[in-house]
Image (cartoon, rainbow, N blue to C red; front, side, top):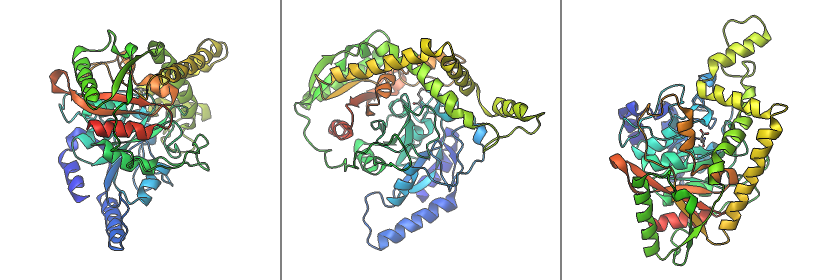
Length: 448
Ligand code: GLN
C-alpha cells in the first residue's frame, strides 16, 4: 500500500485520483496484516485497490466527478466496496471519472482531466478514465469501474489493461451513483484476466435486499475455469463491427489477435448484428432519459451543493442545478426530459425501447452460432486531449462497438491485443451471453 501511495504522489500530474487519505489506507493495510497474522488466507487479503469515484464510500469523499457533490461524504459504503473490504482489499483512494459517468474521454470531470499514461497528451478514455490510467501507470494493481455504455471496456482498451463488465444484474448497484439504472453495471479493471477473475469472484454476488435488479445467480469462483482449453471455441465475428468506421490500425491489431485465437484452436465464424448502427441513437435516448430522472435528486435540499443566494424555493433549485452540473450533464438532462415528455415519449423513448429489445434479440440469434463474440472496442486509439473540442457527437459516435452489448445487458471485456497509430494500445472486445463471465475470462486468460 505504501508503494502504491508513493507512486500515486509521484504521478499526480496524471490526474487519476480525486481523493486519497494515507492514514485510512494504512489503517486498512494494518488490519489486513493482522488478519494474515491470524492465518486468514483469503486471496484478496491485503491487495491494494482504488475505486471509481462513482461508488460511495464512508472513508473517502465521493463526488461522481461533479461539483454538485464536492466534499460529499456518504454515511455508508456501496455493496461492491463493502464486499471487497470484507475480502481484505485495502483502499488506495477514489479515482477520477467523467461527471456522473457521462463521457468517453474523462474530459467531463468537473475537477481535472485524466492523462493517458502511454502519452500524456492523450485521453485515457472514459468514463472510468482514472481507473484505467491508475492501473496502466501502476498507481494501483487493480481498480473498480462502472460501465453504462462502455466505460470499463473503452478506457481499458485505450490504456492497455484488462477490464470486465459483468452481465447486468450480477454486481450490485447499491451505492453506485446512478446514471442510467437499466444499463449501469459495476466491474473491475486490472493488468490481467487472472486478476480480474479474482476480483469478479467477490464482486459478482446477489444483493436482493439492496438492489431490486440484482439477479439471483450465486457467486462463482471465476479462477477455476481460467485454464480450460479453448480448442473448438466458436468466436463470432460481427461483420458490422468491421465496416468503414473502423480505422486501419485498430483493424490490423484485431485481425492479428483473431489469428492468435485461431492458433489457440478457436474457430472464427461470421455473425451479424444488423442493428449495430441503431445502438447510438437508441442509447443516447434511453441513457439521458434515465439520467434526467435519476439526477432530479440533486436539488440542493437533500445533499450536495446548494446555491448561496436565491429568492425562493424554485430559484434555489434552478441556481443550484445551474451551478452544480457541467455542460454534458445539462445537455443530457435536457435531452432526457424532452424524450420523456408528453407527446414525444411515444416518438422517441418508446421506439428506442423497442429497438433495444431487437438489439438484444439479434445477439441471441448470433449466440446460436458462436460461444463468444469478438471485435474492436473502439474505432480508433485514444485521441488527443481537446481533439473532440465541443463536439459531443464525436464522442458519442466512438461508442458504437460498446453500446450494443450494454443495451442487451451482456457481459463484456477488453483485453490488450496490440498497438495502433502513435504506438497507442488497442484492446479486443469479447462479449458473452448472459452469465458467461467465466467463459470470457477463460478466453481472455488463454490469450494472455
Ligand atoms: N460514453 C458513454 C456515455 O457517455 C458511456 C458512459 C458509461 O459507460 N458510463 O454515456
